[in-house]
Length: 92
Image 1 (cartoon, rainbow, N blue to C red):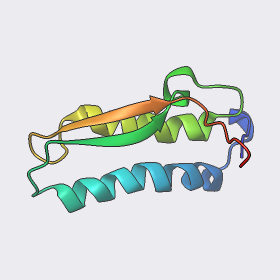
Image 2 (image 1 turned 90 degrees about the horizontal axis):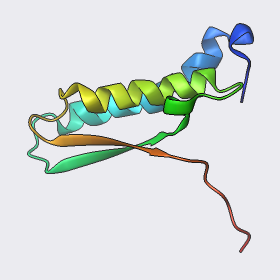
Image 3 (image 1 turned 180 degrees about the vertical axis):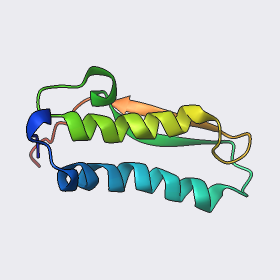
């Protein structure tokens, strides 16, 4: 749900942050002792560009990008955050 930042409530922010940021942190915990070559997180261009009504979504993706850049994930494995644009569904 897209909400202007002035109207954003904590619950709306949590609904965006928990699956992305929490999911990335869970992956970091699961793979912390593993010897990975790399890991890729699926982020969004909203983390870089924002957008009207995208405050919570942009923040969630920016948190995931920051985790990937932090260098604290899985020892020496390179973690990448790939910032995808909007997905377009095509009818079958």
